[in-house]
Image (cartoon, rainbow, N blue to C red):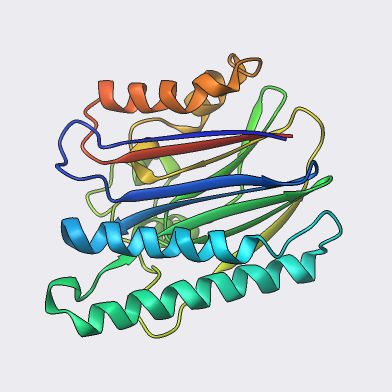
Length: 243
């Protein structure tokens, strides 16, 4: 298991409200999490940091023999803990009211990948020369796509593309989507915030990733540089995991 990640403030923002973390547990377990905070400079960073710290604490419970039920339970505990802490902090400080964060995470145990997401930060599975989005955006435009009212290409340029319908810390309780995927040697899992996907489409992500599969440590920075070259109006974060 090889994992690399990077985050960047972008070309416009004064603060980086993204947070991320990755680690390995033994030889056959790897996990990563990417969060994109919102709610003003201090609120967004606090929210995303709380979520990442919560995952750091709970992921240490995992081992090579953890099954899907155990991993989903661990995701649930980490998300509930983070959501409660963010929500309570926002109620206790007017300057933090309404803060929250997206979250996307992957845990790979042996030959299985487990994924969870809240909001519009994304997880992709890249195999050979193909890419497939695993996560499902919780956003206003994704609802329109799901209902057949927009195409994916129209959604990318829609004025409401940054409106999310679900985030950690905004309400007392939050639900998440959970996915399981079989993974094979040389598969890559890519997690990123929307500072990447607002500027780079899925096929471009695949192209830039596949051609660097033998030097994956360069992938996060390359995608960030590409997003910045196209405007970089948001913070951007990328974590790449190679099985």
